[in-house]
Amino acid sequence: MHWRERNSRLQLKRKPERKGPRPWRRLIFLAGLAVLVWLGFKYGPALWALARSAGRPAEAVKPEIVVVTKKKPVSAPEEELDKKHLADIIGDKQFQPDEIHSFKIKDEAGNYLYVRTTLEPGLQAWALKFLPQTIAVASALVAMDPRTGEVLCLASHRSDGRPVNVALSGSLPAASLFKIVTAAAAVEKKDLKSSSTLAYDGRKHTLYKKQLDKNIKDGQHQVTLKEGFADSINTVFGKLGAFTLGRKELEAFARKFHFNQPIEFELPVQKSQFAAPDQDDPYRLAELASGFNRTTTVSPLHGAMLASAIVNDGRLMEPTVVREVFDLDNHIFYRHEPVSLGQVVSTATVQELQKMMRATVTEGTGRRNFGDAGRHPILKRLDLGGKSGSINDDDGRRVDWFVGFARRSAEAETLALAAVVVHGEKLGLRSQEIVREAVLQYFRPRMKEDKS
Image (cartoon, rainbow, N blue to C red; front, side, top):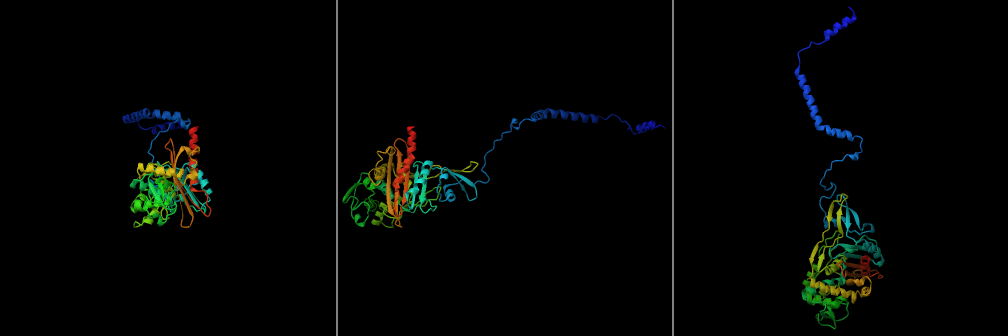
């Protein structure tokens, strides 16, 4: 048999036997076709847009915008901060030139936070350079806005270089600064005026028991309360404490002005101390009322608060040097809000105290450094007042104080200040000179802006 014929017969044997028609295969085909058509209508436009976008720059396709709520970072402090917590973290800090606007801190958990201050850059930078020129054992300057409590300057210097912030030290004898408290009590509780006539014997700045033999109206020298305050006459204020006010009133007004109470601040501040005697000992009361003792102490920060209450219509504001604390994600953990510590004296009493403080700089113990205020191009445009004080500490070093206020005549812009100098063997710059220069540094550029 020929090979071609043989192959043909084999192929015929392999061909399957045809069976009848199978309709289910046609149904499957039609169903699959319908699915393909439906998918084309649903996803065809998106696939076509995607195909068209191939090769285009990435920015040509707009991403979906998702709005989310900002959450606290995982590494952030667990709770919002308060002044006490900040004082623990910041510690006894002294602000350096590169830290006037803001500085970095690290909390107990190791988180880095950033602190924005209330300091006035020009005044703070000047003070950091000026205080070392005092040639003193220690010195400090504090300036604040009496209306808000914001600290605009917080500077200190020690000749031994120890990192101690003198501005926050409550161990400095208050000396005659306490006459502010005594005068406030006498006006508020005993209806005295700045023009009330009083009397004393002996010299102005001594205080002996024999000078207390007579009551407040009897004595060789007649002065007004304003004159006694301006010249810081110890016997006048000693008699007020011993015969007019007494232990309870002195203690009550010391507390009103925040002695023996903690000062809430973002840095640790030592309490100012006032220790009243157990009984009404006339001479001891005279020492306390006049500031002729070393047991009544005050910090420079508290000294500025005393002046601020007098120029803020009798309202004492809690001090602050931190405007806010935040992290790199700008989450705010602390933001200062003004806090009032209360109305320490009435508006009527404030008016009498302001007269006494003005007299200090025009005719009293401050006239040496402020006597030219009426002729000075800057000072003559300011309402100025102050109180001086000086006494030797336990080591025999002269502690020299001046607290005061400076207020624009036409505007409400006001500065309350306190300066202290602890002198060594040689007397250097005085506290009054520091305050005077600070006032000029603060107001001079502002008054130049008024003219421009």
